[in-house]
Image (spheres, rainbow, N blue to C red):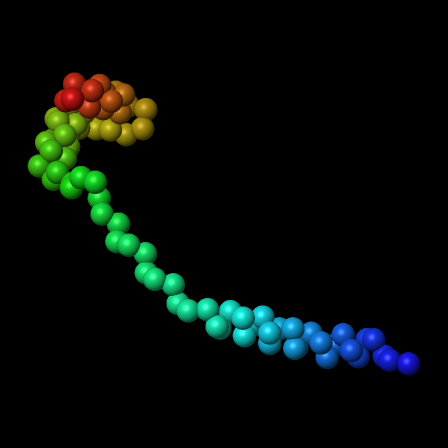
Length: 78
């Protein structure tokens, strides 16, 4: 009679070798296209908003009056 346990143990490494062979036959994929931003960062506008926030609320610790004033400052600048 055939020993099925020995058969399964011998079949496992062959199955792994076939799977590795299948993945090795595939070519390398093309690189992804470069990501291009839809708009460039406007450094001058960001610095202007930053100066407005600091002028309106120099102390912005969490929960302080300056922290609550910051959103109002941004809404007024738009």
